[in-house]
Image (tube, rainbow, N blue to C red; front, side, top):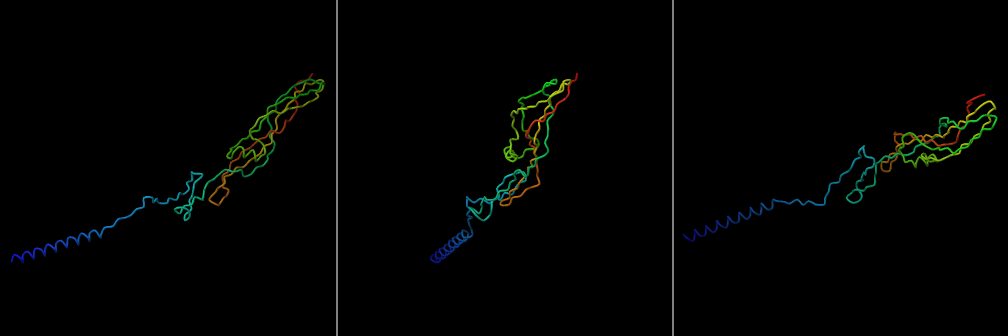
Length: 207
């Protein structure tokens, strides 16, 4: 009877140990591990912002990681056209005076300058090249004039500066990858170049 009990005990112990091991294996078989590449970074495509003037738009499908930086979108100012306007003049300036019948002659070095008004969007050197002269420079020029007043009059020589005036149109130029085109944004600058002196005289006294 003792042998029978011992046999039954060993049989039950064997069955319990086998069942526990099977459940453990089954539980381990049901688990999995996700492998994540630590170097992986999602690709971000940057879309142009209206406040930016120069931004990179990558192309998809070529280059390392499928990104090739070969497309730029930006806007720049360029000279679009130029035209010469009518001459403009400075104010009359009084020179020397003299009585006739002696000849009244005058010669003097006068400071003159080139200048511009308006809104300069491109570089000054670009406008200089466009109109063919420096739009902001100063130098001296000799003014020479003579008149012969009658014996009973005093004359005063008058002179004024004469300028060539230009209109330079600047316009924005848009780049979108391989596409380029003019936009509707304009700005104007008006260069003025000294050309020469204009002369006249006034009768300032008689006798």
